[in-house]
Length: 196
Image 1 (cartoon, rainbow, N blue to C red):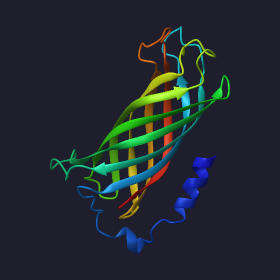
Image 2 (image 1 turned 90 degrees about the horizontal axis):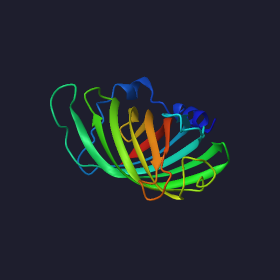
Image 3 (image 1 turned 180 degrees about the horizontal axis):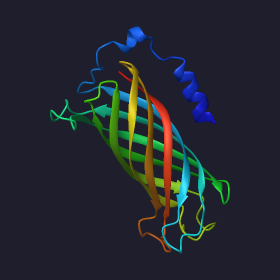
């Protein structure tokens, strides 16, 4: 519900047809991006030992910096960005529990389509959760989160964009405790970014 409210508020800020004719946004080396994404975690039980149907709301504020000018000269032309993201998940099932983490992040943004910019991203880092001991897949509070996915940004102006995408999430303790089955989930999300 919160995602829809945020998107409706941002849709009110859509550019007029005059703005739609503006030149393509120019993201240069050193451009910083600050964003907020909100999604909903949906479980994947990959083996018969994965029995928990964990799900819940995820909040992901992020910061990134563009490291390259556009690379290539075809459909794959794009730019590399690096940064970091905080991840907060409130698990709703099977218990109301919480998880919070910090993940360094890398993103490749395709720039050939002007205001619509597809991207691929990868992030991973430490993650703390109080699921330990409550479900068979988690034995410790200290874990790691790995996230890989794709999405697209639609630039409303040269400095603001709406984002939507999909991530595959994996949470496990990296073999520091046993059992270590881990949790796997899909995470569709939406959000917005500002560039400066």
